[in-house]
Length: 258
Image (cartoon, rainbow, N blue to C red; front, side, top):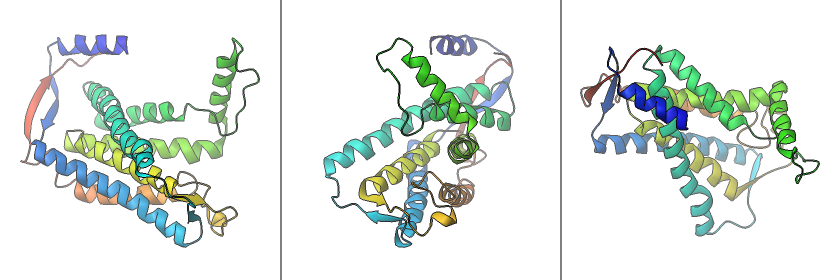
């Protein structure tokens, strides 16, 4: 972070060709974008999850969680993670990338970084031989890197996260602001974590042969969810496109080199 912040300061102090129009919609319009994004992302994910429940893939939990646990496990993480990650990946990184490269390249690059950052974790059930050892961290790092060698895990997890990053990046680019992408991010977290708290996976359910995995993040269900969400977002974002007269553009002057 220190080198990144230093470079951001250096870029802001330079003068050059105006390459990016930074749009600031009215705060009321921003809240509308946030709410619509949250409803679309959370509604589609939870709707598909409930459909899978009726088809036998999931069942209600025996003991529903208390409100305090919902607040701790769902609402607070959804708001904190969505604001922080969107500011960093779609605000800072994508904003800088758009200064010196084409929009599609910038979206792909930041989405790859976003996917790698979320993919850097060991697989379930991984055991460290001696957690107290000085080299335990290197052993853990090796097991994390080993995940990239599994085609099934790569396609199921990494590719899904990359598509999510692309959707968030394109939403930020089309609207010129972070409101809609923050709403999408928060909606996904609320729906996913909320459904997990209130439901449990049915072992050997009849949908396994149809590509339904052991969670909402595996199998073909994420692709179905993201496909429906992408279509709805494309339709809705026409109203909030950066060319809309609802925004007041502010030209940011930057150089073409980093």
